Image (cartoon, rainbow, N blue to C red; front, side, top):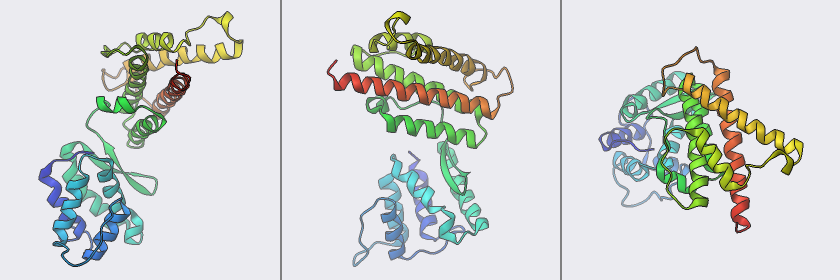
Length: 270
């Protein structure tokens, strides 16, 4: 999560309790809070001004998942004895700052999660670390969009994830850079060939063939759904929550399967 340097001080003073509806936190309180979020600091002699310390921690975490953790932990209702009115006021204050960088805190169950509204793409450098954790993180982003009723965005993210994993598979095996031209079905055909799972029915048991054929059908459906309901195109019908959930689940199943096959292939030195 990357935010503008223009708001780091404002977030720091907010967390310290020097502005807005947040409670005053002592230096010791601040160290305890940031240590809960992954820091390893000690409160003692030479401790800087409270707001300066909080701002420095925001700056240090900027551009990493730790910043997301800090903001989500800070608005955990349990810190405010379940005072939802106070929590909402703090969330509103934070959202007023981070919205310009394409983020916002949205309620998910009893807690608040950072939603990335910057777009429906995956950072290119992330593709070098595609694994089950990567897939889970991308699916969580899709689910966050479903939670905020951005069904078209979730469908587009689901397709983008599938494309990213397919490209990773091809590049990993063929050792070439792949340009995404938006033809997900061509990527799927190429990935199947690279992984040697593009088999004929007579080569494998019927039940395995049926599952693989189901993936073919599912990916065709995902491509069509994203073309008609994703936010990359004009929405041609009233997208429902179940459409978005279906797209996300298809993408997760396909991506997990591809990661498993690729890992097995690499483990065996193929």
